[in-house]
Image 1 (tube, rainbow, N blue to C red):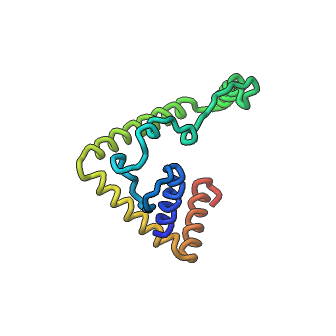
Image 2: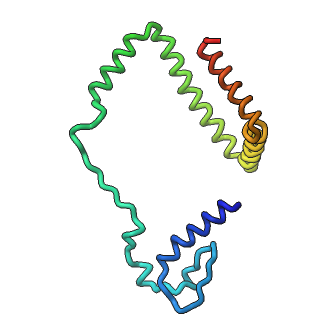
Image 3: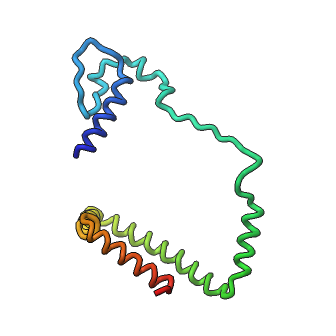
Length: 159
């Protein structure tokens, strides 16, 4: 709560220097001033604000850190070193189909009126439980670290 308040106050302080000085009493509000009530003139609103823009310039360089030919030759060498190419293609195709299917399912869930908000609440609840269960206390953090190490050993086969 204090972090949000300080962020709001910092944002207000940053934005206040852009407003022109007036003889009216200064009111600090987290809400923006409505244009109809603002003392800013129409000329000031139409004037370009160069300080608020981020200007970026694209440039090309001949000495790029990644050489395309070198990248393709490395990929070709790695592909030639693969013994079971059909398995790699099947797994790659399966991964593409899984990502597409997940996208379709998420889109369908998102189109149901209340379901996205319920899913957000479930995710928020699970996140709160996980923080309470594994991250809040020192002993539970150690338990989580040992569980992660055990899973790493099981995956790499060093167990």
